[in-house]
Image 1 (tube, one colour):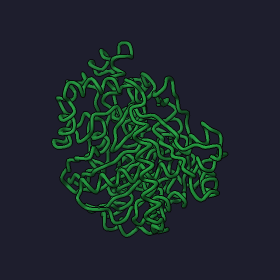
Image 2 (image 1 turned 30 degrees about the vertical axis):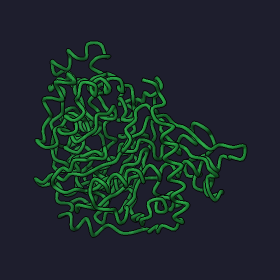
Image 3 (image 1 turned 120 degrees about the horizontal axis):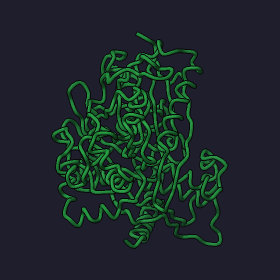
Image 4 (image 1 turned 180 degrees about the horizontal axis):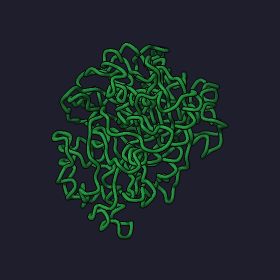
Length: 496
């Protein structure tokens, strides 16, 4: 058995490749950012070829860095930004349009029409999701209506639809694979989470030709071999959406265990076991993973703007040289001096689901500084998570006793302390924070026998730091009160 498993972690702003050894430790990694396209307000697109090119480049970089070749890699796993929608020509593997990103809101009007037709309850019952432009279904419907000739090509089976996992699998296999796993399928709003199949009613209501859909497989199995590039001959053996992969990487294998990932967005996931649990608080019921014949489910709260808020401070306002500078800037003041930022740049996700909310800043005075805005930005990330945790506790009936965290922004000690303070529960950061990639590696490694079982994986998990709540109750209550007032004013800003 070779000594390593490689994870391809294709995210919203960058492509990464991370090499793991048997202990679950990172042995080498590489990352490349790619361009974000904003052709109109509320629209977000990616060049799918650039996604593939950056992902290929970091694979070669990692192998060279580690001084290994394909024969040293037991398996490859994919984890990916979810809901982002790609359509490509089956013969040429050329995209027919830029990928429409999960953050994109161009289909909000279509969603409103479907809601007016009374489809919302049916969507939740069948797919576990709320009716929202966030998911792939309306994005795919938009492409079929707006790309000339695409519908006919789709009906003839000439083009393929997939989320980013499917796109990478197709490119890695030189077009031989058109697959997705159940976790990614459950984020399309086209998949019946009870039957485990593409849902006929959803396909009919959105006029999606079945011929363009991928085959749905488990999250841990050998799908095929890599056919191109430096990984040729290595089994492609694991696949999961980024938040499900992070939950697996955090060893949240038991019902009641929860994690939050701080990436471009924030994503809170609670393992609910082998039966889907319906949410009454507008959370998502989703497939966590399917492994060795058993499907696990989760409740999820999806927040659109997490680390992206810090990127906006850096790229949009220019008050940071790098994203890492936010901790020192925000920490240079004791509080936000009454400044409240609602980062609804792409609407609000769970549990509010307001596609027409927009980013707003309240409480500015002549004494407000960049430092106050930076601190308000970190508080806004933590307060959004509080809203989701509160909703999750209502749905599950079980209060969360600790929160496991991961993702790039989890390395920000100030943010993690704010999170513990505002939740009033401990926040626990593991030694390996690359849990999204680790989860994909674990799923791939289990499929080929690199690791034996989940018990072995759970023994790898270790604490780096535990953040205990220290904020006085009065201060916490005041921040949450101001946050609720700001949310109310930011809501439904765009007039539909």
